[in-house]
Image (cartoon, rainbow, N blue to C red):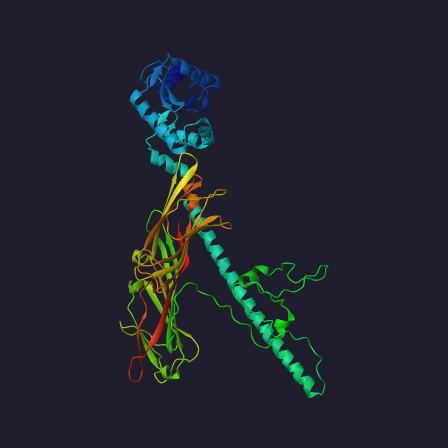
Length: 555
């Protein structure tokens, strides 16, 4: 009897399970989501219930024949299923559901499908739908799961498809830090090689002098050497100019200087193209080589007095494309040059900075006293001593790192707008945020999509050019200031440019890079007065304050 009861209970449970499964199968709402042509040809289709391919193709093929003529209805029923459809230009997007589903919920689900298609595809054409088939099928799976509509909206679907990863962002940050460390190491090694090269030149010069003195002391005359003509001068500059005197070209296959790039060529490029293997004429010459001078163009000249102050600031800034500040770092130094020994014992009074002192760090020269009060002044610790005469001295350095948006010197807005013809209209705007600054030689570099060239709308200030190496549009503005310059150069505090270029990806136009050389201090740090230490008499001085955009980007 126990065996029979167990068998009876098992049969009842099995029948109940079958009934539940049958009921579940009947209440599955969405059977399939498809995009078809008006002839019933499927372009993409996603089935949410396991069914043969012949079955879904038969349902899709018979769909156009069931559409009634001259009617506004968007659903049609057969004996087994219901079609809920919506025209999509020359195509149809439709849901195949069971007849027990809620028609209002089906129509709402269909509208969400249509919005996803319009958002992912530029146009409702068969080629465009096939091109984005993978993204569309992924979005369909996010909207409907096992035949049931998920509680999700269009924004959530887009966030899921973007698949942002926190670990990936961390890895990108680590990679950028490694690249920055590698660049710093390269600069350090380049500096070491430059010092070694100069030391070798000094040793070569001293050895030649000692050998010539030895020959003269022993009574032997030195062997005549070839001397370079006086008209030929070996010059060093940051960008070497072509010489009018050219050496004759040899057609043989003998030894050629510079014909093969050596392993240290990359470091030599950083040093301005100079290598350790130079002609003997420059190695034998007694005077040391002239230093490479960085020339700042288009800046008004400053008449230097006996006491001259030079303030230099380097700006590293990252702005967000949506607006706002991502990061800001400012480094500055103050150099003092004295040409008259009578003004060696002086004290410099500084203006207060325009930002909070909590994020601002100062570092004085070891022989210069610290700031003791709110009044910031610079003087030597020993009042009996004086500043060095005839050579510049860095007496103060500072660093600021914070998120004070009032320190942004120039705001850049870029608006890429994709069109329906495969092009993108880009609008760029700039505006001077600090009226006390005068920005010279401003260059705004906008990267372009690969293989495309811009068509610039006329009517903008400055001029534009195409950087073929970086494949970027460079917009050059001579001066951005609140007032014209001393030489009469016209200036504006704002401007805009518009151009059209092929491409659809708005991210291809970032990061935007900006470079300029400005007059003035971003923090407002300047020398207000200079006085003697002994009698506190005011001293006439000159001042030159520059701001350089070392790394300015809109990301």
